[in-house]
Image (tube, rainbow, N blue to C red; front, side, top):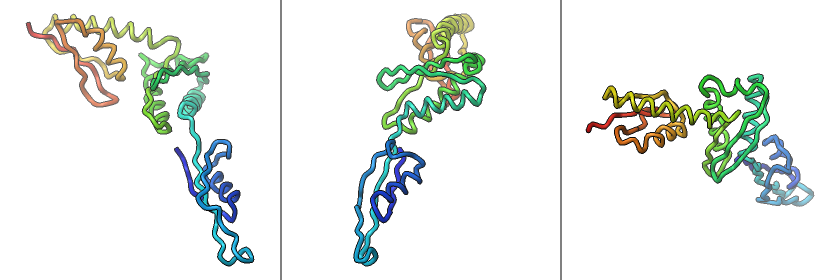
Length: 207
């Protein structure tokens, strides 16, 4: 939330000063009049400037969308964005002709964009929001791949009797691994490392 306190000879002048500092328009702000000011004798003696506090109304979802559009254009892959909201989870579906550029190898570019968008939206939001970026149904396809990977590496851990570490993943992808192996009694899963390089470890259970 951006706000500024400004003064002027009149309330209108104080508001104009605040809008200039915030580089915005009046329809995007809330104006609180702290002091209407006083003209004084002959407009000089005993005069008091008007004081206002102006707050910019920022829609965090719109800010996040604009951020993504700006980045995608700079990458040469302009997009449109469909937004679906489920409580505090915001699902952005990216649509464009060069969407593969935004997904990247094994979704690394998409994950990086998601991480940055998460920072942008929560800089402007009063409550913590979770962002999920998707494109061409990549997330569902990735989940299926992760489940198969989890099952294959669990068998490796059982066969070798050694821990198996996966590559660093976002928290929701790690959750897919944990869930996929939750009913496997011969291994346990845990997360290690620090964000954004946190990863899953599959450990065989001694019988």
